[in-house]
Image (tube, rainbow, N blue to C red; front, side, top):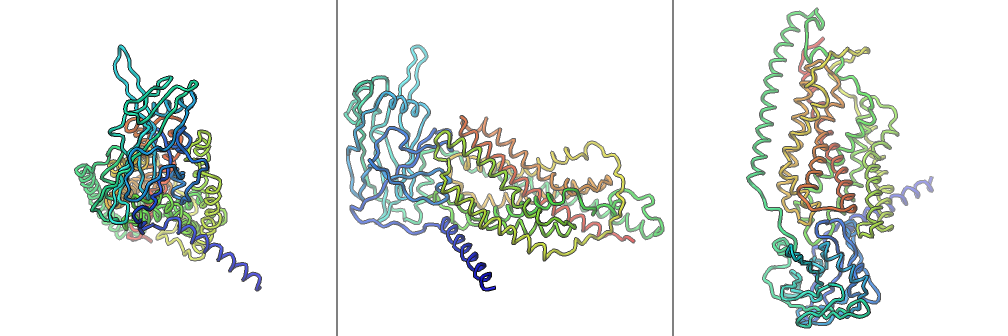
Length: 613
């Protein structure tokens, strides 16, 4: 007995330790690094990649550039690794508040193959990312110019000199950027050449060229306090600003949604009031005629609570949908509290991983609890299905995408240690919490509380008109919620698949609430029309009606890829479409869950309000 207690305590201690590790991965770094005059300010080189493919990134040292004899990498958080960061120390020597003018970084002799590699990178608009005191610094690797038709001119040049402009306030770094404003690029035509001014010298050496890289550092005093330095980064960006706030479009969307909700609620209440009055009067006038001459939703009161097929799958959908509703709400609230500032690389990724593991208990509780209510018997299989309903597609998608990144040598390919950490988090935290939540939900599940008894023999369903088919309901139930978020969806895509920092979390919370409200109201309306046609197969229909919003979101992602972005190539396409499918699945699960519970609450209400024998 003592051995068993010790084993349980040891297991709990291990789980507590893992919880602490996971929380440390998302702990915001709110303290400032203090420097004294002349202290070393480390500049880390991070990654390079095509300008139009944000998720196709490679380590900076994959290019033939100045690098130390022994490369030392910075210790990264989970979110930074998931974001493709691979920071390493550089040869740049920067001292706090000490200006440097045209200091030599290194001299390289490039072979013809290395010159071709640089030319190809510049022609694909490669940019680089450095990090100074957690501040990202961006710049282009080189310069390309296309001019004229006859004769055609194609010029490619390499930036061999970088000007670093760093702003400080007291003993803290506020902002940093890199400039090539007054620098001429070194041409990379075959054979190389000289550059006027002597900043970068290129000379032909055995089919290659010799390049001298230099840099300058200028310190500028700023009045902006350290606590507000994130504003400086948002105001000045290397990438173009594409997230102007279209307040008129957002307000227009809100007005349309409010009118839609008001229309559905008012019309439905008037129709229900008339139905209640008619059905209850008929019941009082002829109590002995059971179902004689009745039509509409009252006549199927003995079948409307007949449990659906595939009960375990339905409950798994509801459980995972409830988990993602909890996770999405928590992420938005954390963002509103300022936990994801622009200097925390990958903080949202880390938070999402931790919250997904910790909210697994919600999916187990909801799924197994409702499965028990509708007389499900294979509750162990239900827990396994719940835990793998999203994790299995996620692992399959990640395997394909990560293999493409690994094949191309991209930094987005996760290292083995990170894969083991994520797998361990699911095995040690996620799955056990799903089991615990399922057991608690099973033991605390009450009765189903159906206001009507269900007959043993199912009633025959009459032939339905075309506009009551499942496909039509899915089209209506998916399009209306999608139209409620269509404006904000562009901003979200531009953030996730671009390089913008999303800051409109208050608007995002409002749009999220409107999305759920529209999904619930549309589901109730479509369920009423379904029952009015004496069709009691509402269980799966309610899930699919609003859940089909995920299909519209995926179609929009295809439209965004071809018409709103300049992404191309196998690496970026695999990442985009793979994770867009997962995003569509998440929206389907969330909205399907909301629409189901809204329909169930509505059906219980209307049948409880009837006077029946």
